[in-house]
Image (cartoon, rainbow, N blue to C red; front, side, top):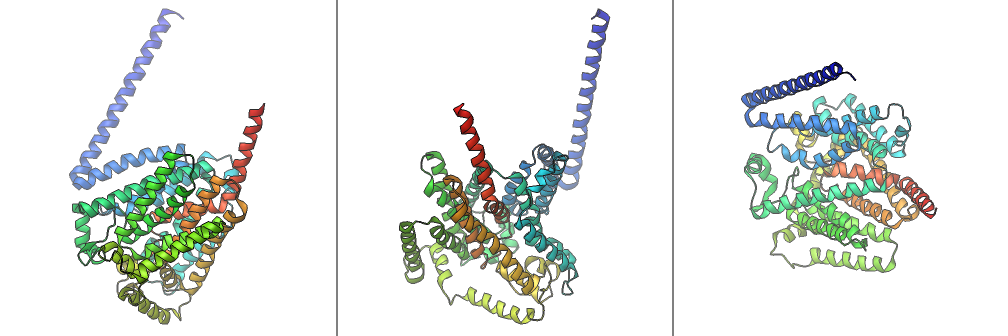
Length: 497
């Protein structure tokens, strides 16, 4: 190459570098001006929104490079979105919708010429949840529906999230390593929730949480001068149920891990902290999670000795809470003990409300409309009968909003999924470690389904996302195991040669 050409190339290089630097400076200047505008107009909220904008941009880019990351971010976000509203009053819950839609777009563009990935979403569960989503959409023309805005907000937890999440998880989370990743992230987040709850118990709530309590939260979270711990969750009910779920699932995993000491200690830590978190939440219904989860474990374990010991422990626990006063001086134990009292005032109020609903819904087989009850009913239709009748139970909410038709179908759908998971654990799964993990999350799901009778925990975050991932794994477990064993066999064959 001639000297003149070399000089030309060098000049061209530095011109490009100079232009690049100018662009970089202009970009930073633009970002600085935007930040200044946000701070000037919205103060601290503006800083939070600006930071959220920057973080969201990077997350979107990463999700488009790796669609699996969308599921992970949804899981992480589900633990914090409701609690964040105490600090910055914006609809953080919509971020879950946004992440799921972005993940779908990522799957679409990353697999534009690969139709096979969409086939992975095929399942009887996909059909069942699609029918349920259609039924919820048809609720828009239910003559009893008073507010379309209430429908929009309520239908997300009742149907939309599971309709978006489960097929997506079928496509993206379909290996044993994906299950391990899910369990690890869940465990870490559960520990953080426990530690935040312990901080509230021994140090106290922060100014933002105190403002939330003063604004009405204390009505249900300060009883007899004692704080019901809620951590960074939406409320104590969700915190207690989520912690009880961690206690069951990670407790089962800890029982069966043999050779991995560090992993066993991690499982034990999550489980013990989960048990403690359940008690300090003061959520009586959460005790049904280990109750039902433990019972199902005994049935799925297929070991007569374990079955006998388990029943003995269950009977001992029942006698302890229902027929003794041991530990009565401890507020948490005293609070949990009331769950076994058939004459408890709170239980009687719930039963009376259900009697009222029987009469009201007798002539409304399709319910009073999605969003007619609970917080959405109070917000959008505060003067209606359903908005002023507490449902408490997740199933009573389904019944009130969608009628007996909706309740029957929903019960059929969710029980079909649970029974499939039980059948897979009992008769189809062969590989020990994978079977134990599926058994653990199946037991956890059974516990949450029972606990949802006392509180609306199944649809709330983070339990909702955890349940959707659980459903995807327990249903697809045989196919995942078959593929895993096939790959493992081929590797062993190659190693011989």
